[in-house]
Image (cartoon, rainbow, N blue to C red; front, side):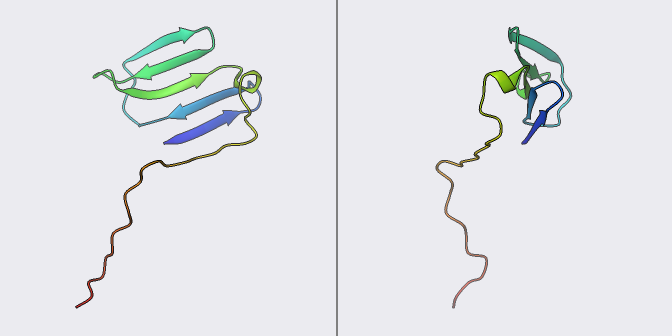
Length: 75
């Protein structure tokens, strides 16, 4: 997943995959979701995101992550 912010336009782009975009749906005048051929989300675009979000701060939190697996066995 990639998050891009374009300072010149105040646009935020969240990319979930690199699949080809088959369709773009307008959620409202500032939010668009790109879908692949199976209807899976590829990206979300938020126009004027600088007016609607606290963009200088970006927090990534993974909830319910599995425990790391040991690669070496102890005999």
